[in-house]
Image 1: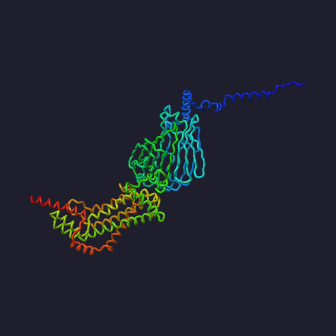
Image 2 (image 1 turned 180 degrees about the horizontal axis):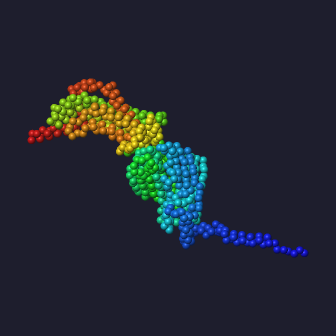
Image 3 (image 1 turned 180 degrees about the vertical axis):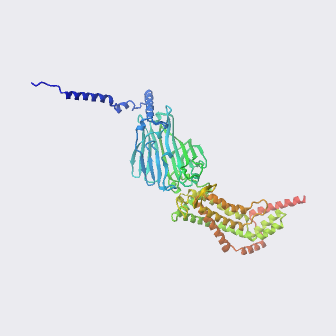
Amino acid sequence: MEENKIDPYQILGFVILMIAFVWYIYTVPEPESDRSSNQSVVINEDDQDLESNNENDMESLNDLIVSEGSDDQTVDLLNKVTYEDITIENEDLFLKIDSKGGMISRAFLKKFNDYKGDSLYLINNSNHSMSIEFITNDGRAINTKNLSFKPTIEKKRDETKILMSCDLPNSKFIVFEYIIPDKGYMINFSVRSSGLGNILNDQKVVLNWDLKALRQAKSVDYENRYSQLYYQFEGDDTDYLSSYSDSDHNENEVSWISYGQHFFNMILVLEEASDNVFFESKKMFEDQGKDVMYTKNYSSLIPIKLIRGDIDSNFNWYIGPNDYDVLKKYDNNIYESIYFGWGIFGWINRFIYFPLFGFLSNYFSAGLAVIFMTIITRLAMSPVTYKTYLSQARMKVIRPEIMELNEKYKNDAIKKQQETMKLYNKAGANPLLGCVPALFQLPVFYALFCFFPIAFQLRGKSFLWADDLSSYDVVAELPFAIPWYGDHVSLLPILASIAIFFYTMMQSGAQMQPTQPGMPNMKFIMYLMPVMMLFFFNNYASAFSLYYFVSNILTILLMLAIKYFIIDERKIHLQIQENKKKPSKQNRFQRKMQEMMDRAEEQRKLQKRR
């Protein structure tokens, strides 16, 4: 029988297996399910167990928080959890949603460009922030912009749903939901949570919305003038913060908030009106510069109502052009974020000029639409122009007689006034009619003054040498800036001022100037007007200068046509002489004036006898 021998290779293999087994026991971590099994259930029946679980929640939540001021040595669990950022686009919008914070970090409008011709961003990383803030039981300030969110995408037929979920300990979570339609600028946005009430200190949750408005126009001062924070009350009344200075305000029953950026807008529509909403608007530049990046800094603090201790809030979020034709298609009257003008001026814009210009721009270029709109406006006002010039012609015919009365009764002011009024009555002239065109044009002028800066159809539209009718035209750059004028020369304001000058000359030549001592020199005031308008229009929308130039040219042509083809001064003179032979007929105003002058004359005679 053969003797058994010990194999040294078997002994070596056994030792290696034993070492591997011991290493596995002491180095492999405990399974995750075993470690979390003691914290996964919240028992509401036992107060002691609930308090213990809440303490565990706070300890685990603290592990998920990244402090804003933490240094590079701070390594939290959240830093180890990274998810992919989401990019989504439709026909009109491109959006990027970050996993860090779960909010939109980039948004640009695909159909528009900024003043440099680049992509037009309303949100570009650091200029925008929206987050949920609350205080925990242990006094920690939690901001969702410091948490990581896991994305989930669900594509439907005509929309895309994106869920950004942040899982908190013990089956708690916060979810941001975005529903982006296949076209359009309105996003459905909602915030939900579960189990949040167990860790809140004072049951107060706030939505913090902050935006640094990116510059979109070549004139940052002009853009800033028409960039405002608007908000609407539950009763459809709107209000705004000043665009010229820093301001803040608290308001109740707020239904939507608008961060206006002249021709572009971001509007957050609340499903339910909120109270104690804080607004703030700050100007982000001191003077007009070419390197300015931001115009305004808007911020809002919106209290979020909790339902059974959790968040369940829905919003509509508009990110798009501040175009009246686009905004009026949406609910909640968000088009009220456009300033049409005060009172009757806003009605003129909304119901006359916006529809008229929209109709004309469908068939003509923007510049021709402005010209045709000007022609229609002047023709509508031509009856007033005719009556005014007819009265001026009558005043011109009786001017020698008025001079005679002034000389005859130079020592008797009351008698001179009485005889002059009789002459006016006989001639059918009214010196006050010279002011009628200015008074009648004032509502139109102010309505158009409000219309051209907000007419989105003018943005980026060129005409002749003006490359953008919504901004000033440039024919020469100045190496320095002139106070109140700017650092450039615009041609359209110069043409408009020249037209105003000639119109003023014609007006002043047809009107009698006051001869009483102490009265201002009206000719000087009228000639000063074109110079003032030159400085005013140089930084304004070139479409407004185009309107004023064409309007004054048309008015001059109408006055020349009336003078040489419609009104015959010789016939007017004969008619006045015939009227003098007839008994005078006075209207109510003239009778009152005559009675007042008669009483004054009686008082004068009585004092003279005494």
